Structures are given as C-alpha cells and as structure tokens.
Length: 490
Image (cartoon, rainbow, N blue to C red; front, side, top):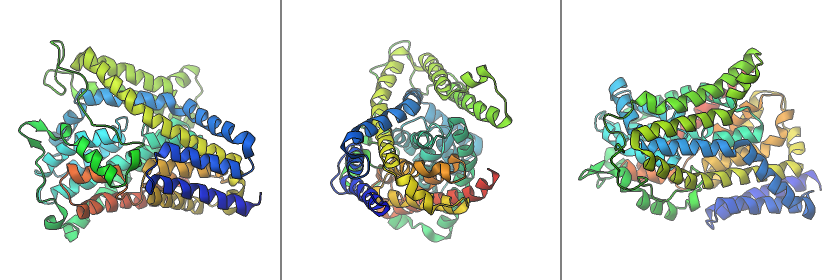
C-alpha cells in the first residue's frame, strides 16, 4: 500500500473514532477498538494479523501499567475515605493563607493527589474551594475555579501516577521514574505561571460576576449536608446530556454517583477527617514514600549507580504496592477495617474503566505501528529538538479539540507518534510531555470536568469557558513553551 493510502486511512480511522464518540456517543473503548480494526484491515496487516495485533497491544500496555493504575486508584479511594483531602485543604489554608490558596491548592492537586480518580477528586475538593473562595474575595470564585481546573488537568498527563501520564510513559517506553522527575520539573512552573496569568486577567476585567457567576447557585453546604454528597449524580446527568459520552471527558469514563463507601460506622471506626485520627503527614506518608521510591530509580540511573536492591525498591510496581499496603494500614487505624474494605471495593469498580480505556489505547498504537505509519512520519521529522515537539503538541491539541478528552487525545497522539520516536534523536520523555501538554488545549463542553466545575463552583457556562477552557489552554501553551528550552538539557 502506498504512503498516501496509509496516511489517508489513518486519518479516516481517527476521524471515525472522533465521530463515534462525539456525534453518536459510542463508548470510547468501543470506538477505539473499531478504529483499530478498520486501520488494521485496510493497511498491510490484513485479515490475519489485525486481531492479534490489537490483542497484543492491549496486553503489552496492561503488562506495563495495569498494576500501577490499579494500585494508584485503590490508594486514592482509601485517602478519600479517610477525609485526607478535606484535611489537606484546611491545612493549606492555615499554612499559606487565603490569598495564596489558589496556587498551593492547584499545585497540591496537580502533583500529590493524582492517585485519586479525577471526578471524585473534583467533587470532594470543589465545595472546599468554594468555601475558601468567599475568604479571598474579590474574585475568589474565578481564581479558585481556574486553579482547580489547571491543577486537575495538568496532573492527569504530566504527573505520576496520573492515568494519562502512566499511559504516555508506557506507550513511548519512558521509565516511570524519569517521567516522574521531568513531569514534576515541568508541572510546577506550568501551574504557577498559568494561575498567575489567570489571576492577572481576572484583575484587569476578564471576569464579570453578574454574567459569569450563577445567581441561583447553592452554598457549599446546605443544612449541614456536604455538597460533595449531593450533586454528583445530577452533574453526571448534565454532563451526559451535554455530549460527554460514557466519560469521554477529561477522565476515562464518568463515574457513577460519588458516595461515602460503607455503611454506618462501627464502634472502632472514626469518622473521616475527625479529630483524634492520624495527622495529615501520616495519612499521605505511604503515597509520598512510594513516589520517592520511584524517583530514586531515576536519580540512580542518572548518576550511573547500579545496585540490584535499589533497582528492586525503585521498581514502580514494588513502590506503589508498598504505598498501597501502607495506606491500607493507616486507613484501618483512621476509619476502621470495614470502611477501608468498602473503599477498596469502590476503587476496583473505578479502576476497571480506566484500565480498559488505557489498554485499548495501546491496541491502537500497536496497529498504527504495525501498519507502517511510523516509517512514513519519520520522513517528516528532523533531529531538530524544537520542530518535532511543536508538531507533537499540535497533533495532541487537534485531537483534544475534536474528541474533548484529555486522556484519549494524549493516548491517541502517543500511539501515532510512538513508532517514530526512536528516529527523532530526542528523549522519548520529551515526546510524552509534549503530547501531554498538547492534550490540555481547549477543554470545552464535551469534557466532564467542564460541567462539574460549572455546577460545583456556581459558574455560568460563560464563566466556565473562562476559568476552565481559557485557563487550561493557557497551561497547555505555557507547558510547551517551558518544555522547549527544557529539552536543551537532554
């Protein structure tokens, strides 16, 4: 088959995936598999190898990140049940004060809390942000909304163990420790600069409370009932009606109603976040230790240290398993065995959706690679560091505008570019980060995050376009502008 035919059929496959998801609201998993089947059948794979390539790509990605995603989601579910997020936000408020809370909260969400499923994290943190917004007036609502959006979305694709980050690292063969270190180096200034830009824009008149804030918005708490336990089901319905099919928004799939796991507390159970439980640092200690274990491997590799024990300890599976075991033990002490087991069961339900979507992204990548697209694309790239990264960013950005999903666009862009990565002459971690930043561009009305932010923070659609769409797009541009000079260090 000619090069032009392969390019044309790849474009048709990607377009078909977009149309199935956006227009016909077909589940993203089914859409990606159908697109992979079409591409395999019409390119050089033919009938014999198409299915085996799809299943092989699925299995390869599961082998790379399956356990990592599961361990990360389970840790997040237990942290949620312990009330660790509420306690953390209150601590940030006391430590940094109301004026700096948008920066500290956005950084914390983008770096430390990515093990928690995105929609769950947003539903928990938004009422706390809304309460804090009243303390940093004027412009409290837009500042906190933009900070939440930027931190949530950047963390998905730039910070381990974000779902998109794990998938990008696996597809492009990037060691997870390397992805963690360089993702951290990029995400911190990206979040700080982006939040600062949005704060400046709001202060010079970009925000109009009369038109951008919902007049009939409910307060963060009504009659003592946390907003996090009242709104998720209604918001999910709104998001579905708005064109976010089965989670084609920022996360892999829209979860069901977010609820507090478990039944009534038994005598040995302490209410989440109650006084007398373990301090904040203890609740997060297992997760922090796991991330440090992973990072130690990348540091050892950069320093040229070779040690079998260090290699074992820094293995991501060992590190995250250690973090999970530690979180379970802390959780049992904080809220009791029954609630921890209920949180784990809920985490297994959430991780199933994430695992399948990530794996079928690997199927598409395998078909693209076997179909010969990588050989064709390599002719359009040079060894120049800047041009390839910009092209990677543009591909991911265009896919995100079309699909409306940060995760899907990042995975698809990485799948298309993975075959050509070895010929670029640049480190694959740069390609992964460029795809991640590009996939952030133009979060809009097909994103579940968009509608959750609108409802939970009392914004109009016009206001959410400013805080979410503009805010995260600025982060996308800032990210690639920071990445290009950063790439000169490689």
